[in-house]
Length: 265
Image (cartoon, rainbow, N blue to C red; front, side, top):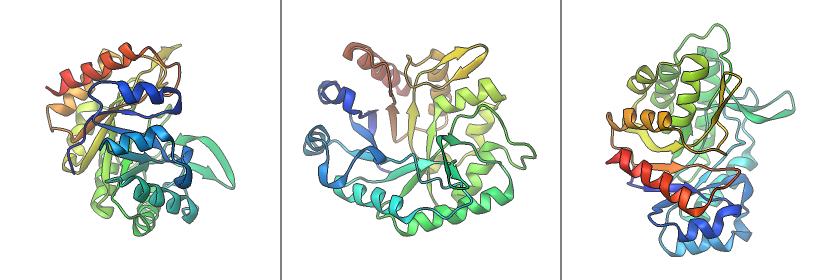
């Protein structure tokens, strides 16, 4: 996977901020919020500067029992081509079932049957995408019962059977360690880091004993510690800061990017 550097999630609320922040090597856009024929001027400006723009989807529902919607895959592929993106991404999750849309990234049961469904859907999507697909681990507040695999094993088998890439979200991993007892070191040891596309970093907060991955708060030192554990095992091709609400001053975002660079060394 090509070297991306350190980046930030582009959002319309901080478009000017992203344009002027120092040291932004790449950006990520939420695929469902963009239309190929009407790309934001700010995104086009970044592309003109040579900044890679990576489409990140949230609605393919690759872990769902229903077939993947070909229109959603086509939109993601068209966006990748319009932006000349080196890859696209989505999540290891489902968002729809029985005709209902949850509006959330729902975790999968870590069973062989669920893995078979995920693999079939990922392969189907890959056939219609013009660039490689990376898949992200999600934060969860509960584990489905009767799991047959650890999260790391589940992701490792997914990669082995589909040859997809991984988008490792260290904030989600930290959230699962806090809320579910996920063993961070074991997770990092079990996943195929040679298939790492890039990394997400984001903020959150604890509320009544539960850690919430909000994307609306500062990145905790503990999340940067998880990034450091990953960095001790591999030099990640890219690391991207996500912020989706309650946007701080430019200087605060610049400080968070600098903190990420400091961990990467």
